[in-house]
Length: 327
Image (cartoon, rainbow, N blue to C red; front, side):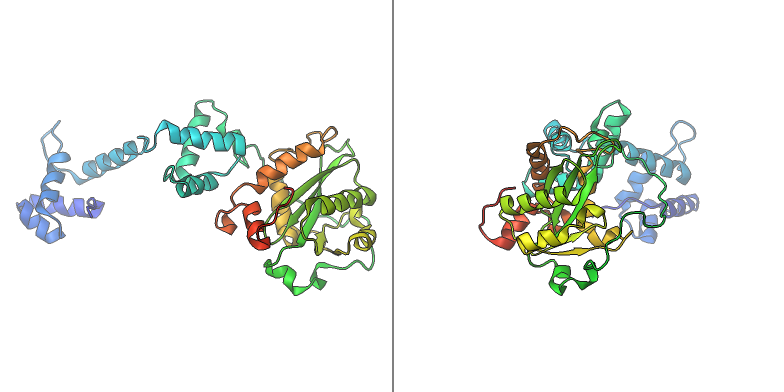
């Protein structure tokens, strides 16, 4: 395999040439082929001045050639058209796109190449950057204060869950939370995420109350046809009617500790993905269940790195076998 000369080798080459050594002698000292030395001196000689070989100038020319070579597209227009379609219409990440294209024998393209394509498009006024998951997100300072939400004594906490919940090996263990719209609206979304597969269910809520949460959760459990054994909720007061839900469904409910979002990592991650379709402060007042189902299906069909780039639907089918479910 051919390797270009290093900067140190170029300075050694220059010093040996000044001593009058031949290309073959220099090649023996550097452990290189004589043709490599001959090509290097011819290619990088300063013909515009005295024709001498200067290592600093040779290194500068090599860096320029390498930099310019990366501007040549290694993939055709059809490949970039497929990349842009998956970015704009499916909102997949560049890493997911690169893996999917490779596994379907379409193209072997790096996710970094896709990011460079997005940056080049943005520099020319294109809108591909907005299709990225974090394309429009701005960082904000986070400050923690005392717990202001209502407290419920005696609720089962996350550390009392059965040990099989933490293993993520069997389906039926879920995490739940609500996603809010503008502060002036009562409407919000209920999200449920299955821990072993990442499969998610989404439902609109007319208001953030325990009755609305229980009603929507009960409907999702019955209509999805999926197994439900446990649900780990956030600490919001809208989940304080968990006992009625347990009596109606037999599902055991647990609660994460305040200000510990990592205890419900699957749900928190999904809510971040959901924000791409329902940005913060965007109205949820007219949102219908069909729109929620479309977005949930799109996210459930998206390949996930942690499952070997299988989608949550494919992962759930593996866990349950050949079972039809409404997702």
